[in-house]
Length: 413
Ligand SMILES: *Cc1c(COP(=O)(O)O)cnc(C)c1O
Image (cartoon, rainbow, N blue to C red; front, side):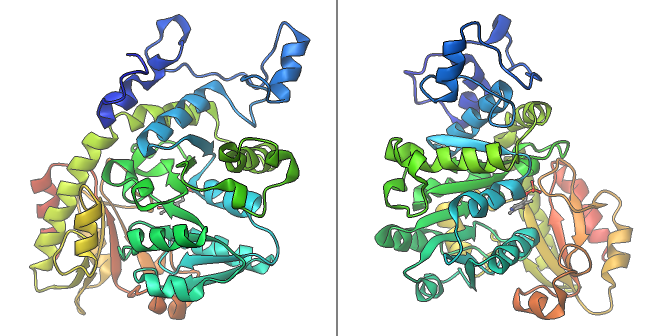
């Protein structure tokens, strides 16, 4: 499969990507390189690798062949120009603050966020970068929050757990017009359902722990540069990275500051497990999205359920945006039970779905949100984020549809 053929589909490309580069002993899967250091017969070659004059690996913290193969796969998935992998999704998001922000900078973030990302932005705010949280389902709120020192706008595609969808395309237009870096966390949609590059994102975040790995057996995260952002206009690029081609400056600084200096690296074994899982991303997502839609429709039609939040339902406020932009509506939904049904009792009656806090596993996982992942932020912030005390989040797996529907239905009584 040569690189001149660019028209292969998503899954074909991911499956065969490793073979586009010379691969050891004809091995069909990229081998797991556990070596931390990389030796060179010629000391001058070692020096030029260190100086970035020729490609090569120096030390495992900055890069590793197994991790590089995964980075390449994710770039293909997102149609990006370069990807950096990290030890977790949070490390990938933390790298933005670590490598790209300074005291006195300003960030505009969606207020509908993964709980730990919310906490991370609060930490960043405590270190001298101002963070404005806005309702990003309306671009007007983002625009009103922008300042001269706004360095980046951060949104999630589908917010976990209430499934609000950011005004993705309009925010992209706004950021492009103002020359602001647009960062989109694509974890919930994955590059199979949506490519943030299509709405102008400069950087894309993926937690590889979730649907891309898919098996829930390895942590990982990634940042992908889509090639759309002009780094030559970004104020916080250090002088030594300014010497590089403008297109390479952002990722070079991110790799140096967050991997080399901060050590947020992904290990080769985890990279291997994620790469194996990634091969079936599209197949799994098609199944989990179909299951999620069936479950959401059944629950919405049942009068013991107070509310169902799923972008695939016509009742969802951003159903139109989701229909326009996404291939399907995702594997995650949440719902509230009517008063009189205790959410803990309901969860304990489920036979198939497992109370657990991960997302994007092959197994269906359920969690009482207010009492677990959103417990620390307290009732007021929960209310402002639309998190009811009885809210149950469901990460839908690949089980047989009829079995899941029956499980969720019979637990209602
Ligand atoms: C899970 C998640 C993260 C963090 O990823 P980890 O790999 O668990 O660190 C970030 N963003 C979203 C939307 C997530 O669901």
